[in-house]
Length: 438
Image 1 (cartoon, rainbow, N blue to C red):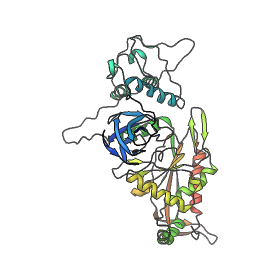
Image 2: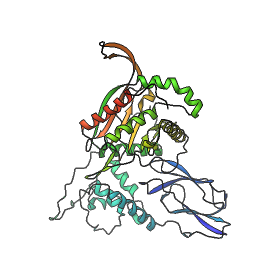
Image 3: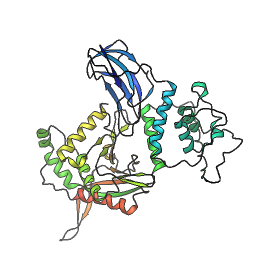
Image 4: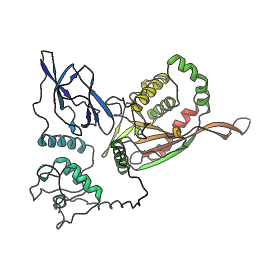
């Protein structure tokens, strides 16, 4: 008999930890190769973790609700193989959790601006994890105030949850002495944000707790607004050629490829062509550095049955033709709605498209999917009377028209560039050949 560790998988480049949602097996259960053992969740995706071997689960190292670092063993499986893998004999201790927080903080510090205040050593002798200290710096909470916030951790330790709860409550802890900075290093202290006004309601209401995904989406959207200077440009597009072509070939496409052809792959193809002409739109901002991505990983916002939203990513979209894009779009959308996305399939996007026209909306002002610098919303396609210019003179015709809305980060993309980019996407769509093959 040999022992094999079941490891918390890496869910993407920026994901350093995952939460255990539930165990499908218990200690003493037999598990087959690739059989689901537990369900985990990150701020990007929920997924299942399969067993890498066939055997008996002899030890479960974490319980439901625990947050576990990527690469850490979560269970031990005994197999009949003769070669054993190293096995950790003890589950995570509070000290191990602190090391995990240090790892996460160090990785984030490289991407975030320097703190605006300097925290002195606590006179109280109280222990603070690096993660808690990092949050305190970003929120301009001096050490004298930090010492007064009650903690729920071991020996009264202030946890990340305690600090975030304090920040969300808007309460003020009286600090007798403000932190002072050294004369050799000056720091600008920004005033704290005003507390959120309480919601007054009577008896005729229904109060419902946000689910985990909705909380994560809310946090992600608010963070994006705090990070990027959002600007939105609009342009109207004549997509009559595209509608004509799709109506002509959709039945043949379905029979030949076994796939439905939607408008989304056509939009993605046009966006990729425009991104090659505007590399700063396919970029990210890291402090004062501009990261221009050489690959084109296109995220497509997908509505889930429960009303939430997820953004699976088509990797290397520039290397796929229209048929390949159609298959990738359908596959990711179907698996997203059924909760079967794999780790990493929502990570690494360089640009995002969201189709607000699916809900009958003419246009929208989407929020940028960080750390990207732009997102394109496509509206509903509607028939409208349009003035057509020709050599014989102007005429009015009924055409299929659509609005494009580009939200972009004004820190990097100015109005001229943002407007030129969305206009270029529109030009590519309007020049679509209705007689082309696929």
